[in-house]
Length: 137
Image 1 (cartoon, one colour):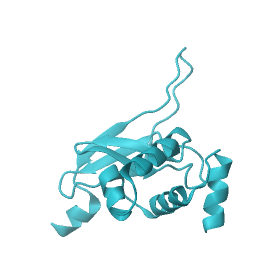
Image 2 (image 1 turned 120 degrees about the vertical axis):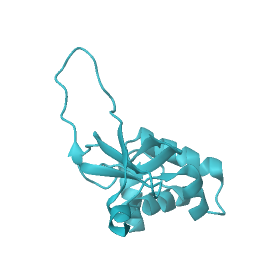
Image 3 (image 1 turned 135 degrees about the vertical axis):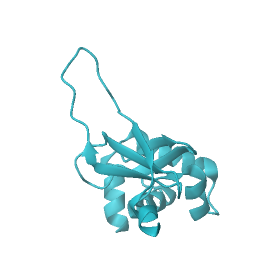
Image 4 (image 1 turned 30 degrees about the vertical axis):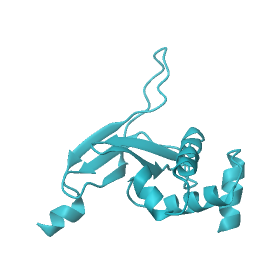
């Protein structure tokens, strides 16, 4: 798997350092978006600035996208980062009960016709109660 990650990073012109490989592989396992602090807790011996710069690089290259919710900025592997077609114009969902932010990739938004401007990203946040929390009620 490390070689696969290395090749993915190289294909995006990202130098595959040990820390970048670890962060990329960790993000691939997540189903929810995490804050810098939450990611930092997973890599408790790593430098916070290194993690932050890695996330910024990954975002610039389209491997992750950031989501701003009630608790700040969170990061999630983008579709492109998982090796799928880039389609990050989807709904982000924040659960008011458990505080988790997830991507609802099945709810997407169409491309807008060429109107003389360029949209680089769309961030639409819905807030409510997630499936797991509703099942517990």
